[in-house]
Amino acid sequence: MKIAISGKGGVGKTTLCALLARELSNQGKRVLAIDADPNGNLAEALGYEEQEYGRIEPLIEKKALVEERTGAKPGSMGGYFVLNPKVDDLVERFSVEVEGVRLMVTGELKEALGGCYCPENALLRSFLRHLMVERDEWVILDMEAGFEHLTRGTAESVAVLLVVVEPGLRAIRTAEKITALAEQLRIGRVGYIVNKVHSEGQEKRIAEKLGTDAIWATIPFDFQALEADLSGSSPYEQCPEMRETAIGLIAKLHGEFYL
Ligand SMILES: Nc1ncnc2c1ncn2[C@@H]1O[C@H](COP(=O)(O)OP(=O)(O)OP(=O)(O)O)[C@@H](O)[C@H]1O
Ligand SMILES: [Mg+2]
Image 1 (cartoon, rainbow, N blue to C red):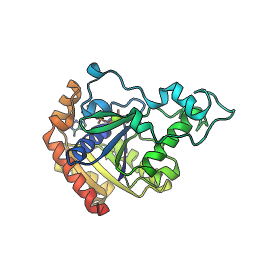
Image 2 (spheres, rainbow, N blue to C red):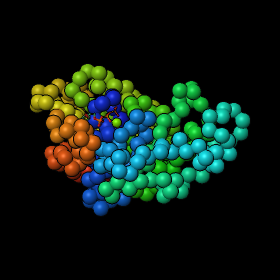
Image 3 (cartoon, helix red, strand yellow):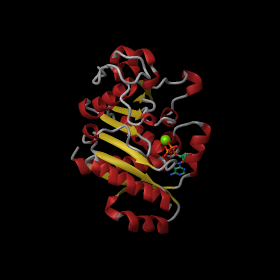
Image 4 (cartoon, rainbow, N blue to C red):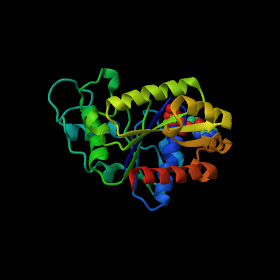
């Protein structure tokens, strides 16, 4: 089951990703969480203590690996390199286990170079394709609002894109743009997660804009989430109500996809 999570900055993508991954692991599922955000902090949200264990080096920063697999130095443009490098051993070699969840930090795709064909991107794109198309487990991808990571072939294997929305027109507009992109890329389904809701009135107004049926979960504003973030601990442990939402959402996923 492959899930991607997107939405405007700061809406709660990483929080949702961590909650789902931890709860799936709690339910005994094999789960792989992917931090594909260049400024990502999924490790922390899962409960990883950087002070204790050290920084996790993103895949794309492993220069020797990029060169070994693609046959070209990172950063080199033009010239020859392997477009489909071997990637099927990378999870086993480089993932970090956090509270029963396997975590991979991929780092930033070099999209600033204009969709560049550079060795790093070849490695990362192949790796994401491997994750989404070939692996037989729960994979949850924490992304930025843009979809640079997903090529069409990869996107088609995403069963559902969960788009996180907070009360506010900007988040709703971003969600609508993301939805249009998802359709172009032929992602199977899109479900909205309305987060940080303060009142029923807010919930209703968002439902009027996005459509009640398209909303897969609603998460109330929770001060404990902020506390968790401040103290660098996991919302899964610190926010029992959010954990309940994750349980409900997983049940919904089971229902929607006959799992
Ligand atoms: N339901 C909630 N109630 C209150 N605060 C929340 C809630 N969900 C998330 N937050 C807080 O909002 C902030 C942003 O959350 P998070 O990092 O998950 O968002 P994000 O979408 O991943 O952000 P970014 O775009 O920077 O990656 C964090 O401080 C988090 O604790
Ligand atoms: Mg994030």
